[in-house]
Image (tube, rainbow, N blue to C red; front, side):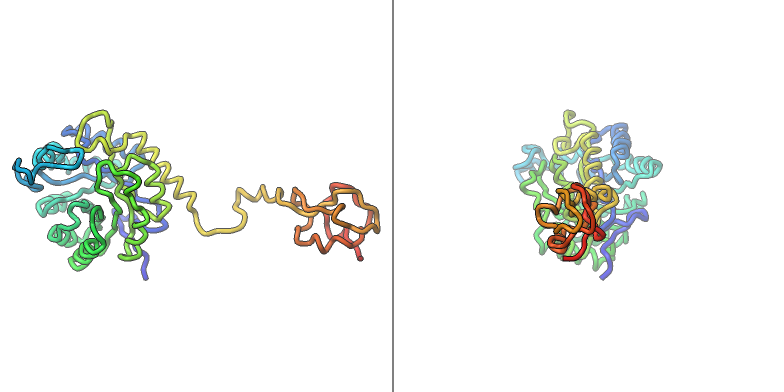
Length: 352
């Protein structure tokens, strides 16, 4: 079976390769283009590989209604209407081509999450290199078909989805022309707690659907992405804000620049530490081999005297014969006078 990969702007993303790290801008621009542009710069400085936007308007997400059905309950946005929240959070569409041009100049990928067909059409005109599907839209089969039909790589978050729903989404994408797909484990709580992350699910997703897997992380922890890398994550997505102290719909579950940079560094260190399946001394360990135990003469022995367990011991350092030869040496006679502290070698060992 071929290795599961997707390619974004020519970069291969999959097992055994450096994780693809996405900085999610979301609503952290606070309706300021200058702030959005600064977030691009910060993402680059922090070591992100890509910045992700969200492409919708309040009207493409919901309707302007304040009845019970349209009021948010049980989240950090309680009491607000959906239309009101999306009006504050959306990224003006006229900014998005300009932000992509800036990202292109910086050598950083920029793509977006579309929420309806009009957003897909708009992003196709922008020539985005990939698409991200939000957890809340992983059950929107018409949207999945429309995005898959572009032929672009797709990254699908699986928050809240049952395995059957994920299977339906994957089949829909593949039947609609989506050939390159990655799945992200996601807990759609804001912020999420480590106890609800269930990162072991990632490997199950990868083996079940034969796709690269990763993590869309809404915790404020840096440990969680590092553990995800150890479990095989190929993609890490985290929200980035200039400051959590500044109010905004997403700021409370976003990392500040230093935190994001520290996370990237920790991820890269984890990747180096994982290495490969290898036994024996590494290059750095070679100098330490001498500190292994070996056979030494630990008291003076006269020529023709028998070596015994009082005169021969396995001690550090490792200049003498291997310890496996202790019983071969004990009971045999010294070929000459041997001083205490001499490493045992076969030329010192005579007959019985």
